Image 1 (tube, rainbow, N blue to C red):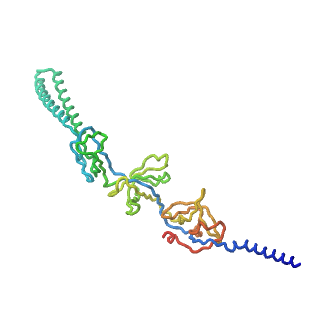
Image 2 (image 1 turned 60 degrees about the vertical axis):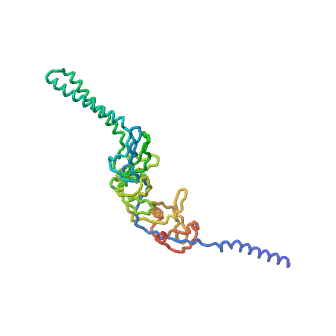
Image 3 (image 1 turned 45 degrees about the vertical axis):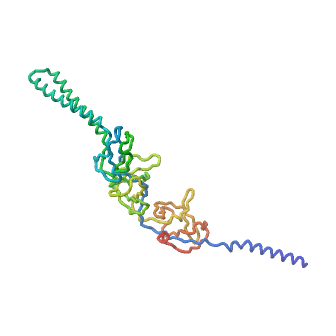
Length: 348
């Protein structure tokens, strides 16, 4: 009898011990502690951001039109030259000699023409002889023009007023039409080329201003004026190429800049921090607190700006959105709110 009582007592003790072990995890489970944001409307400006490149307003590589030895070179590196300034000259003594010869021949032919004209007036020669002399005069004039044009090709001049780049050749070198002597660029005003997605094409209008930011935001933004667009949209990237003019800038051609295009103001935008959005394969979600529990809600986003994202669908004004501790929240599980934050506090 005593053995039965002892056995029953042991079984009761073991049963209660198992129950305590099973219930222990439930007692130690803790609520997710989160910070929240109450959704409110904000006044924002919808800004389209694009990448751009600085292009010189005018740019040219100076090449000789003919091959020959460089006899004169004047490349003031890093300085401004005026339009028409002689930069370099190719050897042209042979052409100058041919030009001088043609001028002598022309002078003799003109004298012969004048004498024959007097003889023609008194019927001393026939008309055909006079026409031959006159034709000879015109031929020598054509030769002179031809040699002058060849000599002109030996001159390399600045086609416009601009800043001279680095010299690429030395005096006495043999140059060909493929040889670069130097570059000249007009940089007192510059072009900015950038591309925008085709859905923003209706925002691009000639004469409209855009903001240009260089040096990674270290310098102040400057205004540029749109002057033209490429008529055809890029068929691969589906982008529209745009060109704007920026006056009085010291940016170097080829530099990278950010371009900001205003797409209008939105006075009813709901903004949330970007880090509180949970990306998925198909949807984007935020955690909304309702009745003390976490609810995962699908949302649609709009404009992005400085760490914040506009919610266009899925969240209403007054909803309580989890902004920190998102990873600890579980669907329909209760959560503990530690603090209610504002957008300004979260952006600090």
